[in-house]
Length: 84
Image (tube, rainbow, N blue to C red; front, side, top):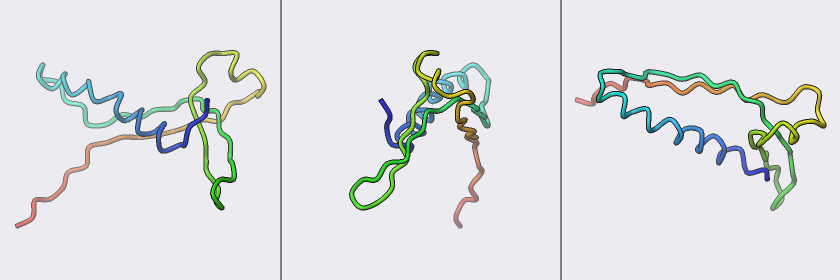
């Protein structure tokens, strides 16, 4: 079932949170790049357009399209200067 794109991105972001545990082992994650197939549908809802999406759950989900859409997403730590 397709969901709003921001929900999919939020779930992907939450899925890397356990990697913070690696920081206790002396490893630090400063960034992550994802390149995933994505099922997408643009629908009209409440007087506007909504982009619905989700990663294919199995190979049969994406058989109707020869070349699936792709989501390229980079999550990175960005240093923020401390306020004086």
